[in-house]
Length: 409
Image (cartoon, rainbow, N blue to C red; front, side):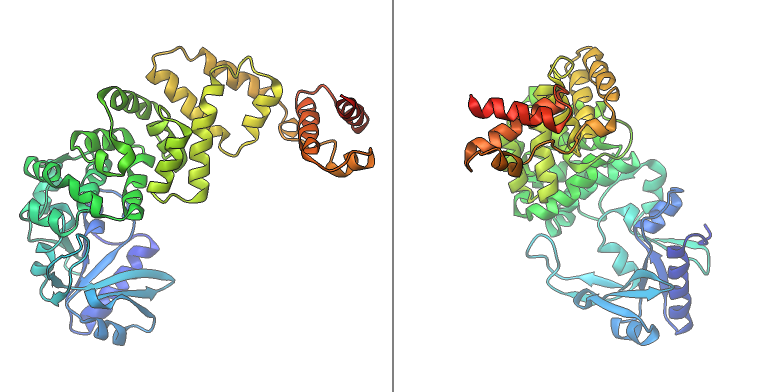
């Protein structure tokens, strides 16, 4: 398994060569080794070494201590940032996320403190050999995800590993080892001790990926979804509809708001707002989530709705996501896709320049017509613009005539 590829791989190889040239052991570690053995493109390349953080700083000109307590240094080489970590064992975990302290040690000790066997592998590029202290290669060959050592201990140390197990197993198409599954079910309530932001980071990666249907099925099967936030308790009917909708999404990555809407569109917009608050979603994702759920019912009659209503939906940046949500919902409800096809056909006939044209009339125009400031200004402007979107008026003269009529009435 030769390491020769993209800039990240080359940067890691440069770092390893320099560390070894300085009398140290240095290896590629963790997920990049797993992915290379699976013939996948690694997301990044991490280096593990017996060199202490201070020594790493001495050997490289550009470094950043991001986790000095844990022996982690970011080394920048050839424009690439590579994480370099000193071999270690972890002390006691008190917060369910991080060890209180670490002790620097050997490669074997470092492997034994990691989460899953397939993540506990090392690769020596100079000797072109995989170093396996935990049985990770056998599990890779068998397509099994299991913890290193006692699963209760591993998940007790870091509760988020339970969600990581699902994300990784779904992404790789692996089965979760039975003992690991049982431990997850036992310890699932511990997720309530993890911050909403960290929960959302894992969930987001799961439900946006093409493997989202398998990930969601595993979350429900392992009884994890109920502990993602207070809003995730589901009865069997909800769970079945969600599974059908999420399986109906296209086989590609999708936006966060769409993925969440697929999971929550049986609920109200108030529920969506509460969920967004519970998961600490960004304003963009929260806004799109609420808009998608609020707009979905209108899609049922979108083929027959006023042109203005269709254009207002199309003008939203999440229009493409709304179409995907509508299609997935029809499939989940076993309804014909004729309604979806009709909406798409009607939308495609609208020229881009007519979807959200500049208003023909402004508040200043109404003031020049003698209208006093007040709430009616907004309502008249809205009515005029709606007529413009419906293509009932097409120029400023017609807009002013309609406004004058509305003012008189």
